[in-house]
Structure formats: structure tokens, C-alpha cells
Amino acid sequence: MEKQNKFGVKVGDIFYASYGYSMCLNSFYQVVEVLGTTKVRVRETLKRTTSDDGYGQQGHEKMVYGLFNLDREPLDKMVQISKYDKRPYIKINDYKHAYLLPENRYDEEFWFDYMD
Image (cartoon, rainbow, N blue to C red):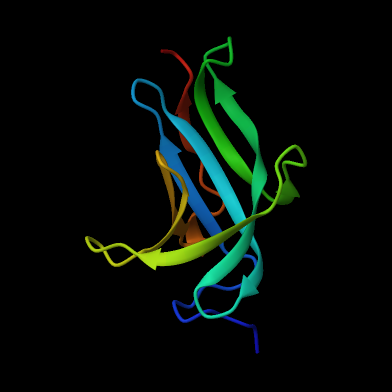
């Protein structure tokens, strides 16, 4: 049986963050290790542009499952539960929270917009 934390988060699960005030930026974090009942170790995954405006400023992108951004170190994060919709999430920093992405959305395209 796979090791899960008390929120059901397991190795291979994806946390997704969409952020930006006047832009839309996406980040994906894959769980690489479960560290006890509430902590996980995550790595930021790579993304692949699937369509854009011809300049790479706006378009759609997909997460690349299992391929990590090697410029970023693994992060140890506490899994918490949202008060509003009861979804598990991790706090990446003061302005970015990543929510557990359902497995049926792993192949989904996500809108990005780098135009400020």
C-alpha cells in the first residue's frame, strides 16, 4: 500500500498554483516524498507550452509529469486544509498557495498570460 499522509496525499500527487495580480502564472509541484502525517517534499515540475499568441506571452501550457525544474531545490511543506472548500494545499510563499490537483486534471491545459 502507498504511504499517504492524514489528508490522503501520496507520492506522485500534484499541487497546482495559479497566481499573479495582472498576469496569470502557473506552477506545478509533484510530491516526491511523504514526511510523516502532515508534511511532504515536493519538486516543481516543468511546463510545456501547447499554444500561444505567436510571441509566447499568452496561451496554454501543460505540466510535464515526472520532469522537474532542476534549477529549484526540493521543498518540504506542511499540508493544510482550506477552510473554504476543504481541499488540501501547501503554502509555497507569502503570495502563492498550491492546491491538490485531481488526477483527472493532470493532462489539462492551463491558461498563462505574461502580459503585465
